[in-house]
Image 1 (tube, one colour):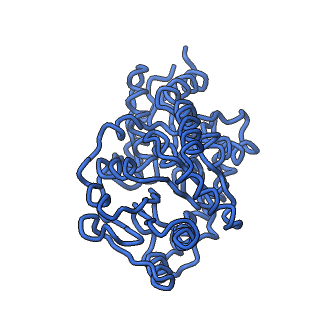
Image 2: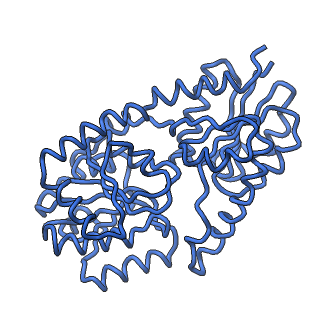
Image 3: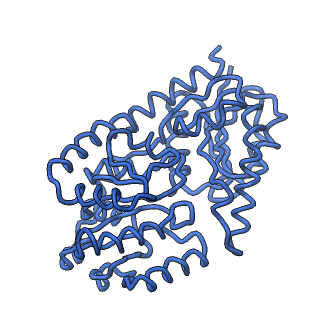
Length: 364
């Protein structure tokens, strides 16, 4: 009988989506009666070596697979149940800069590990059907789809109401994007969207990008594009509130909540998402979503947002205009998003996770 289920991660950061989920899973596993700890190669967690020294015949491993690491080759020969949580791996071809080569290699090697991880896994839980399909060719059992475990209600209740107050002085409608500023998330296309929207939709628009830059090279590309298009850039909400593009630094969860509440629309031109946590966060703030239809984005949004093809700028701009200025459409989108967000809630995810564990591990 299994009495311990320990999680293994390449890197543990309790503030990112995967690290946050690992903490929630650890607490759920403990509630189910299992001993459960988090081990990682990097980050603020016990090292993988400690797991190897402590495991016994009643231990199971739950590996969060999101990038290349040594964990698959270390765990594969162990005689224990091996569960895999697959979060997807960004295709390497998005990263072309000289300073992005380490990430490019890690993503390339990670995708090469998909067959091995799938073959040795006794059970796989993917956070989207899109991710499940990538693993399904290599698994003996069909992967289970469990949406990312996240306490969205906590974020809604944790709002710094004063943070976004200066933005109201600008009188502009804010287009918001939350997430790492990286090539695959295509913030350069969001800047292009803003430029065109200010010309053909409304001059009183601004774009707010919240996230850390993936590389200095991509940061330079973003700023150069803004300069080329004549868009002003600011980094301080209090003093730069009239900037066309705001990229605030060191934003807390409570401040992010305030921006969700202030914005007029959440916009995404990302070309690769394995799930898209900020899309769901926006739904919880009744913030309408407009997003490029790619990877797992259509699945995550469902009927709860407007999907566009960014290659068709006229239709994309028309959709954005309607979302911003048509109250009937806006209300319909928000109503649909309220239904969709309940399907991706922590309550739903918890129920699916508990059942997956019971189905995947011997109980006697």
